[in-house]
Image 1 (cartoon, rainbow, N blue to C red):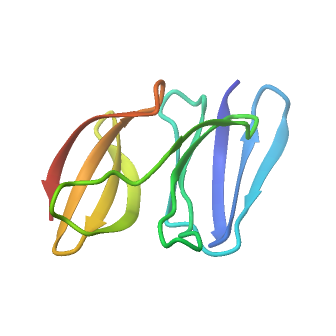
Image 2 (image 1 turned 90 degrees about the horizontal axis):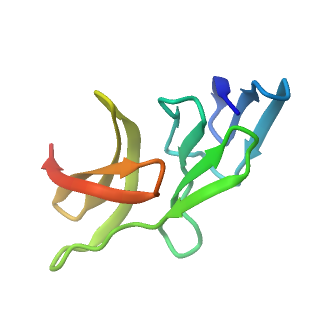
Length: 124
């Protein structure tokens, strides 16, 4: 499976083409998403979902056909109040999610094969 042609024209709707079936996959949300990227290997997409009723949205990694591969919750750092995921993009070859905490932001590198953080660092 390969995903291609990510479209994010409407802030609450993201679509892409599943190359194996030729079908357009659409994900609709109740509020604007915060970020979306095609995975570097084309196997799917990563989306920073809108904040839920509890206040924090997840990062969803989806396969090209739209099936959920992983759901990644907001990390916790001792002594810092978390605001939530803010952005999602590639830094070189690393899928990176920015998490906002009160007074600081941290970048978390995500392994899209395992759904785990591989490292983090403070960013500005």
